Image 1 (cartoon, rainbow, N blue to C red):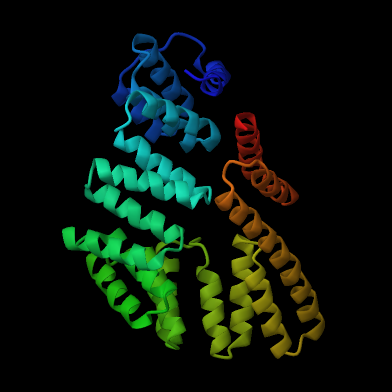
Image 2 (image 1 turned 135 degrees about the vertical axis):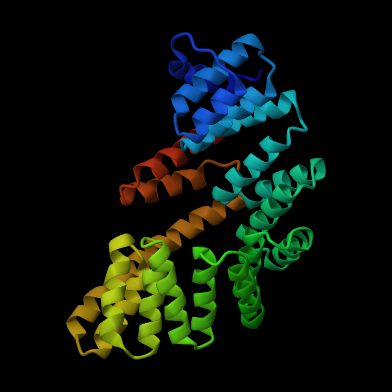
Length: 340
């Protein structure tokens, strides 16, 4: 056991106070139910009986990751793989964690390793998703197609392929795939949302609004849908409706620079020049912040073993009082720095 893992293990000991016993099934059920501290106690009791249980270390990693403690989770996943290098679930989980952390090279490596161990449909789909998040869209499209060739009812693969074609500006292909997705699942909000975006880009604004309204009917707080409806109204020159809809979008995401920009544009077209100026300045300020976020993420992807990128990201999240994200990145900075 290396010293960094030992430190992480000791730091978790406060969660394991008191006698606790149970099975893997108990721990996994507790994790699904969100009773993470209890799940951790069960896994610890399993390790007390068998200190070389890779499944238990992976379970602790999963519980920590579920609770938002990715930096600590990674150490337990690594320990699981030291014991059992072919533990496919650990490779898959780490690919998702690193992808969420914008460390795409590592994410792809773990996803590929999972596929080498097992070519089941779950790992095939995860590999496609990891490629998509890394913006390797052509590769992602091929992988989604492979999943569909194995299972032509896989809704996630259809949505992934549709969103990939959308990213590649292959709008007709995207529309065809998303129509198939809706045939597979006629109430899938992601399918309707993506089809709405495609139709908006094709100039079919009324059809797009209809799809977006379907999303709202199914999931009222779906991210971005109010913005997309507002944008369609804006392109139809129905500026008052666009303004009202953009304002609804800002109630969900009050820092969205793009929404502020378009809201400013609509107010300007309605003759509300002073309001438009104020909103434009807000859009500029938020966009500068977003640019700094993207720069920090790009730095992390390029230099995942340096603490500076995590520190930059943590400081930026602190500015917006996004405390949990700030804490995660400060913890990663400390963890990375301790290894250098």
